[in-house]
Image 1 (tube, rainbow, N blue to C red):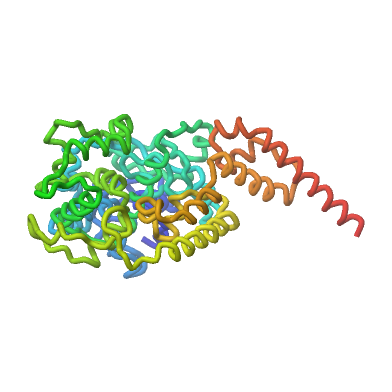
Image 2 (cartoon, helix red, strand yellow):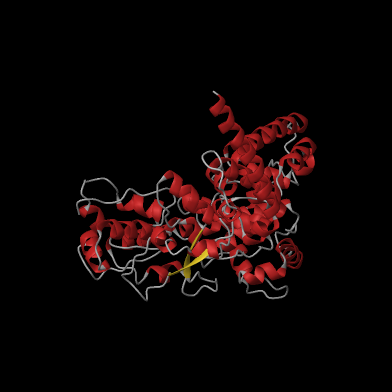
Amino acid sequence: MIFFPTTYDDELFYSVMARYHWISGNENPKISMLEMFGSTNICATKLFPTHLQHLCERLPRPNTYTPSEFIEDNTFLPYYAKFIPIERYEKLKDIMMYGNGTSVYMLLGITASEMKKAKVLKFCSSCVIDDEKIYGEAYWHRSHQADSISICFKHGCHLQLSNVETNQRHKHAMVTLSSYLTNDHYFQKSAVELLNSDHNQFIAEQSYYLLKSKVSSVGLERLRQYYIMKLKEKDLITKSERIRWIELISKFNQFYSESFLSSLNCKVIVGDEYTWFHKVLRSPRVTCHPLRHILILGFLGETVDSMFDYLSKNNIIEKKNDKNISRPLPTLGDGHINIRVDWKQRDSEIAESIRLIAEQIFIDEDTIRVTKTEIGRRLRIQSLLVRAIDKLPESKKALDEVVESVEHFQKRRIKKTVKELTKERAAVQPWEVARIAGLRKTYADKLKKDIINEIDINNQCFRGNIKDSNLK
């Protein structure tokens, strides 16, 4: 090879290969695979590429990338890594470096999983706009391809479905997102309004953090002990160390709704003692899909970050029935309260930070909605805003003041888009504003009058500026 593309943030490795194929100008994708890997028998795998060592050895500049860097930054192994035994992770990594991918899914347990698999690659129309501004082209994002992800964690937009299949029926085909979009696919599709948007947003965010986290496997028993500790804080564990299954499952189903859990193939039925829920919370013998761990964390009021932070700071001893786990621990949530916390002072500080971060998003981020989740993520207090919000009245008031409705967010995007478009020209069309602002069809129709009104206001300013310029 005489060149290899620079990888982008959150880019799927398949996307990097596809961009190489497009830039190289090769008509036959097998030629591109031969140039990259030295063989035409290697598949253009979407999520778990293999033979990465061969690729790195053929790079035009030595040590540009390592197989480990590709695996951590551009493949889906990190998504599963935290919830599988460390020896299995090392074996999978070795396969992706040197071997073929026939055994990857079997080792992950994916083939036996009941989770719904995405049949095609997904993308976010707002990310497309951002990426074209920053990099000059769109690309397939890794975080958008996680199982059961419906929205973009960054923008809250409904993800669009492409026609690029994730299976290996066309094992050499490589399609860039930019080339796919040349047919104007994504702006012609109407987005479906999502129910349970807060839960969908949480799942999307936590999936992204799983992919970005550098934490390796923490062990199935340590995970179980952490969950048991958090269930105790919710009084869902008896004094004799038994889980209150009926109450737990009822509350879990109520928290998410049975219809939402069913849509994810994660429904738990009271009375059934052999569900995935039981497998995770009893002495774990088998791995469980990351999405199901995310659902448990959401129910507990925790996040991927808060869990791994705790496990890294508190070296939980991996022993079954460890009696120390039942000892009350200082916490900021319901249950055992750390009496040294000055809640009034903390509430005041958090409230001020909430208003400041919201103002920053309003000014700098026209593609991000001001939500409780986004504020919590930026301040790294997601769990606190869920579990201890009743102890933070000032913070709750600040959130009520700054959190945007979807409609208000769309109007803000309209204003910013129209302002940018009318800087140079007056002939701006409503459909053009809706497209560039990434509005869903339902909002584009609903806010059409607002778009026209905003165009008229900016056109008056545009004409006024021209008039002043001519007078000078």
